Length: 419
Image (cartoon, rainbow, N blue to C red):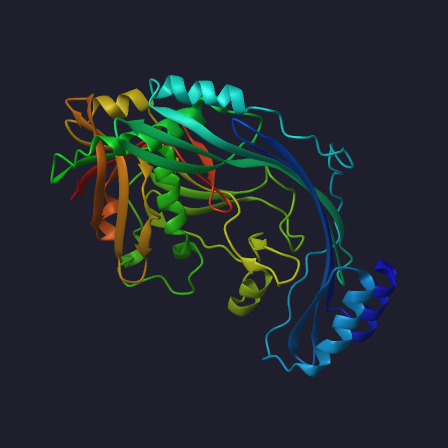
């Protein structure tokens, strides 16, 4: 039993309405501390099929062609709900990946370099505890009844770093996940890690009950990821009157064309404008969601695993400004407020109830200058007011894993309430 056998079996079972997907993933990982370094190699193979039979969608998965074939036969025991047929992407000529077949390199040994950078950024108050790095490669193949035969390669370089901050008898541990696009970015990671480990040691609460709010790109990206359900909802929440999403000049875009030529269903990747000039103008659709509403897929069918059917999800979501300014200009414009350097808990957002709550650590700002550290603060209120009070975005767009890449520059909110 091989791929050709599976293709013929699906074509007999569901003429014109089938898809065959396979994935081979490989990664090399390293775990480093001051006293040890361990290396790992992982490999995974997966196969999946979707087809329309008797007016209902069906799905099966396995770790090999024979196992998938058995799963397809066993799918007859399940009676799924009826759904409209999918508009499978048609055959097209796609460029072969430039790095196709290239071996996955071992992650570089960056522990000592990052340890020195964390110590320097924290003036000796923070120490790097551990660093996990992963380099990976996945090759996907997608074939369907419309004649598509697509092969694409996905590569990643990500990791997790942990540090501890100490001041007298007090200690604080911080842990950050990160993803690098073009190569190691040690200095920015060291600064974020040092801030997350040392700023909470001050025990100083927020000095203001309200004021301007400056968000580090990592915090801005976490906020955007938390509001992402807005771009997937069949019906927008009631507070989104006439599509008014945020302040004038604010845009939200999803564009994964840099990461892969197509999504997990073979639909070409492209730039999708979701919010423009503060107004909601688009949504993210996979083939199933598109069929349900009579539209076309936007190329956002995401497969978190070969074992489950694809679902509409963001792929590379980010804030975009019509006129971005340097980060130093945003800082200089703050008369009284707080700079959120790092989250101390997951951002809590209830899109339907129009509420948000964000706990963070950072520094106070007075007359455009950084003041003392703020050990912990919380901003909360109406999500609609927060988004409409975004006054400016800087030019330092950065991406963070969440688990898809979410990007944000430094964000200036004209007013927020703190406690």
